[in-house]
Length: 451
Figure 1 (spheres, rainbow, N blue to C red):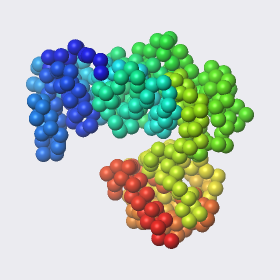
Figure 2: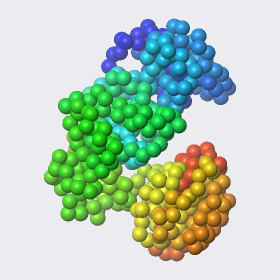
Figure 3: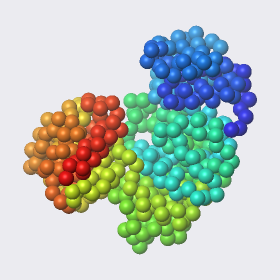
Figure 4: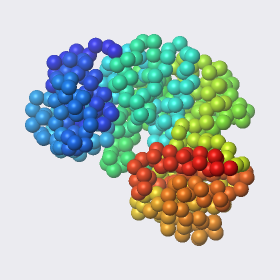
């Protein structure tokens, strides 16, 4: 950890508890700041309060009183709290700096940083890069939006490490001096526009990943995404493109049915385990980032030929009674399910359904070519039933994802793909997509053991 006298003996307000708020508060306390934590939930719902108060950290729960700003010199904000929040709006009015904990992590980290952002594929790419950097000169540490708070990792990181961070637009929007050695911008689709207010502001938040980079740093980007390819031209970093469509001698690309990086052949495509064209893009980006951060070709190839996916993200569960089973519970929208379906040419039994956000599913129609059976559940069950009936696809209704798993096996045959890719959020029946995916995995395990 680097010393950070900027906060020593200064009043710092941490807004929002959860994991990132807790980590930021503890780090700031260790750095000598006078920390106050403010959370909108009642004290009884915030289990972290006692642990913080035992360290002498003041905690204010149940609202966001504006008087907290009177002595505050810096705010560390939970990424999920919108800038329309009254306390945040007033802080901006008073020109009080507002960071997310990613900025704090950057300020105190001794390690170099590889930062990965994009609308889709961040978690898979971050996981791949972390694995590819094993056995390299600097030991990799993984953190960020992937689950481990960046500040916690930064406290322990040394110059002998490299931090691999998955970063959302929410996190990047609250950065100021953040400057990775290697940044990756995977793609850009319309997302989180309710938070950012417009597509332009969403792009502006993503672009902060390279805002402070110099020619000594490397920016890996999709040459196939016209919006990304256009905006990275503003960067002062050394640009490293990747593409599935054209050969790019300065970046990562496909040639002779293999992945190449800067004219070095890395790995044949047919040796890669993880399915899907979108995952080939993630792999190209990962190869470029890992090579630039010191990864060896041997380790990179090992990862490409053994990696079966991140849990709940087109995760290959295994072959069960002759069916190949995939858990894509993270597919909480139509776009993600389209990408999953595009990964297969065999007959698919698709498990779909969940929270009804008021949309129809017509956009899914072109992707249902190989779907022989739809097993539907949740609030959107009837909408998906109507869609299946319209297309002449067999539809089986289920109570929940566990029941859907059982029925999927009953209505499939050897050689079929059994795919959970709901195209809906989970909140009608499950608190998170992870909980939904775990319920599916448990059901599959039970089916495996039942024969």
